[in-house]
Each structure stands twice: as C-alpha cells, then as structure tokens.
Length: 150
Image 1 (cartoon, helix red, strand yellow):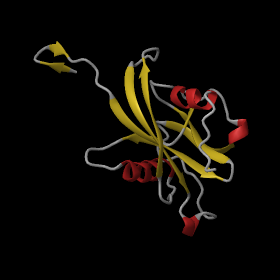
Image 2 (image 1 turned 120 degrees about the horizontal axis):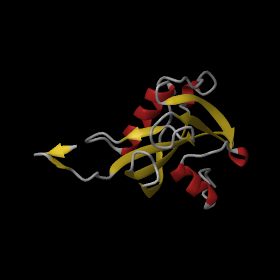
Image 3 (image 1 turned 60 degrees about the vertical axis):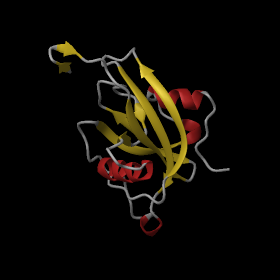
Image 4 (image 1 turned 120 degrees about the vertical axis):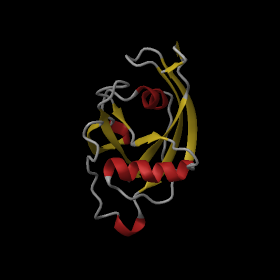
C-alpha cells in the first residue's frame, strides 16, 4: 500500500475463528494461502466493520463450510505476529466455540465453498489432530488449550 508515494507500514488485522465441536472432534480445513499454506486451521476470517464476534463466527462458518451453527461463545484472544511467513502479517485472533445448529445437526455436512482458500473440511478427533496445524492453533494445542466445555 502506498500513501502519496510512501509505503505504509502493515497494520494488525482482526480475525475470528471458530472451534466448531462435534462430540470430541473439531472441524479443520487445509489452508491454501500465502500465510500458513497447507496447514490445518479452524474456519474463520476477517471481522467486518460493525460486526460482533458472534456475527462474524456465524457468517464465516456459513460462507466457508455451508454449516449453520448455534450460539457462538468467546473463548480467548491471541496476538500473532507472523514474520516468518512469505507475506508478513500481524493478527489479533478471536477464538470462539460453537456447535452445529440444533435443528439440523444430523443433516449438516461440511462443504468446501471456498476451494481457492481451502482444500476441504473434515472432523478430527481432538486427541488425534492432523499435522501441520496453522501456527496460532498449533501454539494453543502445544500449550495445553482445550476448547471443550468442562
């Protein structure tokens, strides 16, 4: 980006991602991106202007997977400065938790609605997650984070 011929410094962005739970499994997709390419990540994306975390979680899961989720709840936030990526970036990431909407749990199957950004979605048992995980998620898992309610 430029402003009057001068390069602007990159600015932090806000992402909202969702631990979508089903039993002891979580929904993950393999990224196709300049940041975290070929790593497994949660569904999610950029927070839009004026949007709540909950609204963003519902919208992003629907846009990426076609799934309808129940109430999304805030879990934690992380500060991720990714200087080792081909595209250096800084994200404040809001982690939410949700389950599939009650009225359609059995009928819903994740679809890959953004094949240019993801290779596909699948459910993975929390005790047997695929590798490699996307950096921010990997740090949380290695730190002992557990998205499941007590």
